[in-house]
Image (tube, rainbow over all chains, first blue to last red; front, side):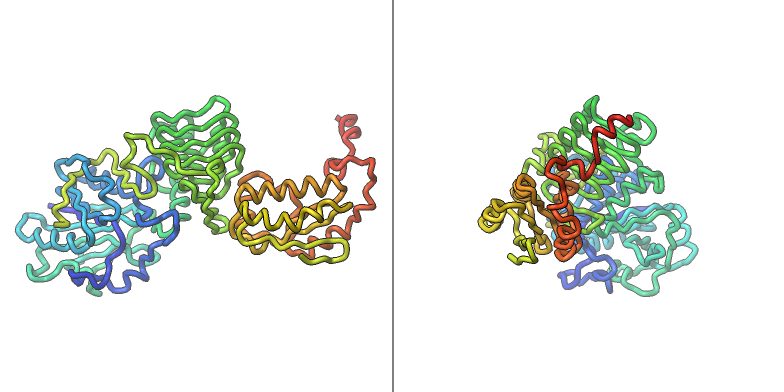
Length: 348
Length: 135
């Protein structure tokens, strides 16, 4: 039996009451402290209709993982309290998700679970779970960590039977003698907003398996439900228009651009090689290229410049539709279809 | 404000918002009223620019051109460049990597050398009559 623990939050922090830490964790997985990222990891930002974290949960469900426990940082999760529960996915909200995850790992001692997949929803990684498990079994170590060509990833398989009950399982992860599993598939570490942009480009050009939500109305043009594209607007493939997004007349959306949920691109604006994150308004007659827009923040990827634009006629945060209030960007879980318990027992 | 021959170089402030525009316009306004104003705006310090800043630049360009002068931009900071491109006005201005280049550009084609009967766009598009005939 396989169980999964997914951490949605920052990398393992040092000096907490749990004493849990990963050596060099902060240098290996630096958080991109940009305005666009704020407190949530980029894996929580909705991209092509669904966040990377949400897609990860879906993937685990499809892979028939017996139980999936999601430990989310309290700074992110309260916005999503009240969502329903499902048979095998439980959401725990905690100040220190790693500490609570360690407690959960310890509780597996009394269960039939043999292996536990522990991963932080931080990077977009394409790997075969069966292959990873097989590699773990063949190497016969207590823990196996996934690596790509750039180094270690926050993905582990822990063999419960090889760890003594008194041992803190997360300490096992720190051990230098963990076995290695080389990920051969696509990896995007999502360390900087430009990585998010790269993920969109790679998805729309089929360089990775991530597929946009919605329907492909013509080759390379993806339109999600409720999107309104004016008949005088032009969408040049590949491009994605998200749920309830509006593209007004004389607009041009081109070169791997994505317009996420509840965005509005106003009259005559050109969006080229850019990502418009959820709930953003882009004003009339603008030329937007090589950029990421998130509310009134604009990051020009080409020049590596972040601007906060205070003129609401240019760009601004769009009002969030009532039904979408739990899905605001960038502090968004975007789990959508996946159902979670509002269980906060982990933080108690 | 610096002068290099007939050319005036103005350093724009870090914050080119309504407040910054008011300050800079106090210096620019008298210059724009002279005959054939030749101005280079040094944008190297600009870290923030809103629509007031863009509008000020367009207003100054218009005023300078009315009096047969010109306004050019130099040492554009990435922030200023992004805003000008976003608002589709970057191509309206002549921009140079340094203020020296901006100043030299005025000397390279003296304003006196341009016939007063020639429309301003003739320098860019050539003789429209000839184009029409050819087409």
